[in-house]
Length: 178
Image (cartoon, rainbow, N blue to C red; front, side, top):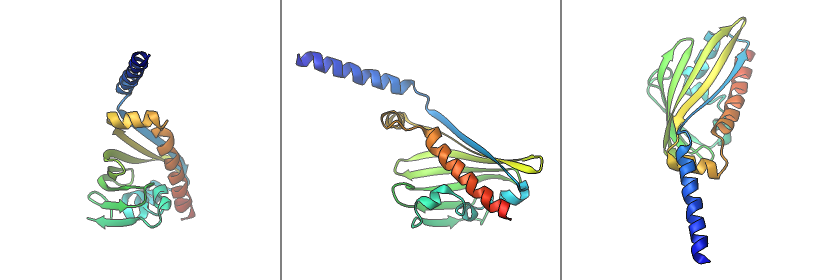
């Protein structure tokens, strides 16, 4: 009897590991919103990490998080480092590309709770008298992260996407207020 249970358990573990291995490592999360403001009015809020904190949904998760800044105040080379509670973790973001008034690219380096790297892109496209703002993130999960996502029923697109929607709504309020 014990041998049958052990065999069944081993088969389930192997099946789970195969399932995890078959999951895509890469992910992409993207959300967009239209704002009644010009790209020139919106761009500075993405191109400055200090201004980014005013509308970032993660800044509100831990108002006591410690933020430090290095490099230029805005644009390529600007760096923001954070250390906060378990909801926001610890890491840094670096602006690696800036094309006024249409694109900002960042690299996110997470230290805690899990080390990871992701690429973030903001794009602004005129849409009549409004601007379509798109916030996207791409990255890869290693095998352990894929297994954890499955076990915890963690949907990256849903979790990050909800925060992106919240952040874009915050940004919209700021830029439309002038």
